[in-house]
Amino acid sequence: MLIKPPEPKGKLDTVTVNGPEDVPDWDAIDWRTHEGNVRRLRRRIFKATREQDWAQVRSLQKMMLRSWSNTLVSVRQVTQRNAGRRTAGVDGQVALSSTARAEMAVWVHQAISSWQPAPVRRVYVPKASGKRRPLGIPVLADRCHQARVRQALEPEWEARFEPRSYGFRPGRGCADAIAALFTTLKGKSKRVWIVDADLSAAFDKIDHARLLAALGSFPARDMIAGWLKAGVVEDGSFAPTEEGTPQGGLCAAAHKPPYEQCRVMRSAGVLALVTAMLALDHCA
Figure 1 (cartoon, helix red, strand yellow):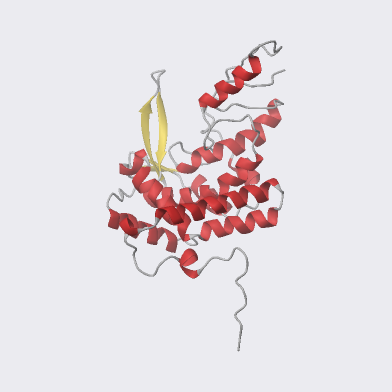
Figure 2: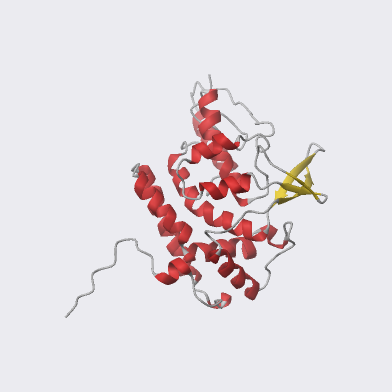
């Protein structure tokens, strides 16, 4: 009698990796299960990063990037939950029905290894100063792929970031930065200076080579490079992108923290950077 050996630890089943053969019933999906799968894998990536087990980190990130649960959760976030779900990129495509969302999930998952990023659509929104802020709207499929990649990238960098950095991080915001400042400055603290700092055109001037170098051997590094170089379409004209990252894509905020933490913090010589433009906790 043959005894089937146990499955290797952390192995994903065929459906989890490849997705279903048919388009699923979107309204019947067990979202709690799939969100739990993604959450547990994020925790494992975070833990492995803290332990500096880089081989395990990359292995788990590859698992996340192949995960059907990750694809489902990412497509749901982009097409159903995000405020910009009705905004199309250069291809004019949106997915506002259950059937369209399910078909998008299958299409995105099947294109994991072959997807080629498309140019972003340039739009402008007004700023309080009266100027206009340029935004780059990726096509829907790119936004779904970016959400997938972010699930693999974010937990690694969350484990590496300074504890008193608050900008563009999950579960953190301006209120947390204000609370940290209050705790530091209250009472008899000798720290009496608050520096309000803004990085002028930070998104527009991000150096692609530095950013990709900061990502190291991240498994989706080539895909991120493709997004950086995808170009911009404005008024029907295409322009290449040699530097910067467009504001508007899901990975734009994910690009900014590692770039700022690895480049700005070292060059400025500060111990903590509040990217919500509120303060530098320790200042010379």
